[in-house]
Image 1 (spheres, rainbow, N blue to C red):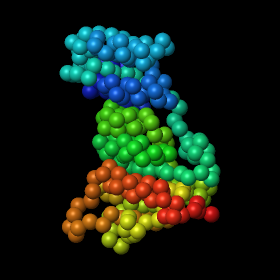
Image 2 (tube, rainbow, N blue to C red):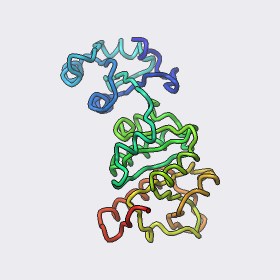
Image 3 (cartoon, helix red, strand yellow):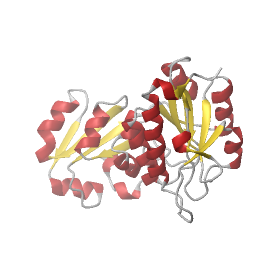
Image 4 (cartoon, rainbow, N blue to C red):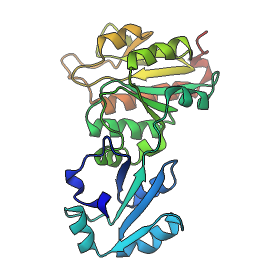
Length: 264
């Protein structure tokens, strides 16, 4: 029961495990590439969860009162599970799994440090079928309870890599893997999103909504795109902006006439 105790006081970063909350996230854990270590449920959920978990995953059952006493706060979703993070995914392994010549779509988050925003980005990435998310070392933890909840399990579905040296990896994406780097910016001088033509292998960089993208990352990008807005408007929430960019990208990708060939 130790992983379930006093959840609000714990932080998942640096641990080998993570915790999902609720039936939906637990279902997505149990059908994901991640190993489920155990499930803890209140009595009304026990039969359904035991069928889904199968014989290899321990399912602990308690009354709702006992469950709440263990987690340390009023919890009414009835289902918790512990998953194992496993070995970190490496960038080259992700890229090889997609293919050297195959179309590729990545989202790059150098410094998205709010769990709500990163969760929304993962949820959007899953919705649009992105091949992966590349995170800078200062980005928030994709396995945090809040990020998992806000992503609706998207961070269990979309492969992600946490880079130790993001600038180096961006240069490698361009030079070795022939991926076009596209920066999202708030700049009237940048190319309007509606005019964009997308390479078949693209990485879209989205920045912290207050600070934007770091200058060293902007410097290695091939293009800069912007969402035209009314003068004096604040920048959009980074999760919302990412959804708009991905919608336009995938809409054009469905029309071969508007998608350019891979960089050579």
